[in-house]
Image (cartoon, rainbow, N blue to C red; front, side, top):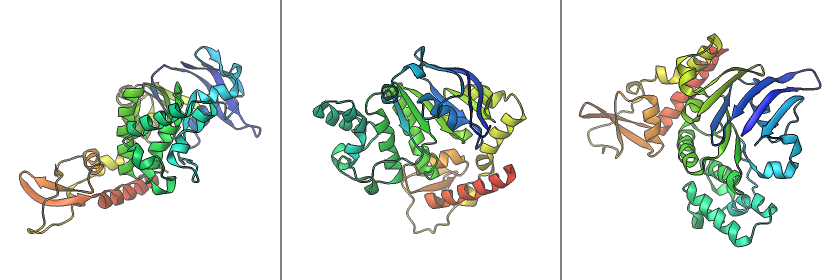
Length: 319
């Protein structure tokens, strides 16, 4: 589907952002590019839709050089989702989603039906959201619109550049789950950039871990976690697991008295951080049990504070 042959990108000041990349992304694959800041992952992504011009080598899409495509036709067939969301604030949600179909001269009724279909696909009621402006939506809702806008003209390829990194961890977890469900339905070729190994492991069919413009290891999540090829990969995996390993639900408990009702959603004291976050994507707070005794509760704010603190500590340790 997408093939890199000896692809490099060197800037005028001599900086090599991407260095002799060779790999193939298969049709329908969820392919994740990951690595530390400045490793070349976003540059690699932008080479695909010619937002950045390569210096050496060739990129093929369906066995045709990307340089042989008309630039507008190439980009119309490649959806693009940014970290910044980038919805047009003066336009309604429907108008935002309809931009590319309108450029492609779709019939008005076809566009309206497509907007309805896409909003339903990501759990946003069309009658409720169609005429709203972006500032009337939460960050997670805006990013859902950003995703379906990229799907509006039914492109074969979706590029996603750290699309969830600006969201809080609970919203991010929910959107990751939504993305997994959505991909099962649409079966697009998705190239996804992230710096979060946990996110990569959760979403990817294959992961391409980069450093200094080169591929360090490329394989399935299982391959990379179970068989890291060197210390850099091992350290990168380990850094992403710090918050999970250090988590204690007991230390995060909010006290309760006998008269307080037990929250509708509950979890066991031995639950992992991932299990707690999963529960909190659906509820503001959850009750915590030790064996059969209700001993406390935890809410989104407590977990967000824990994640923020552990992230800062992890960053200090990694520097």
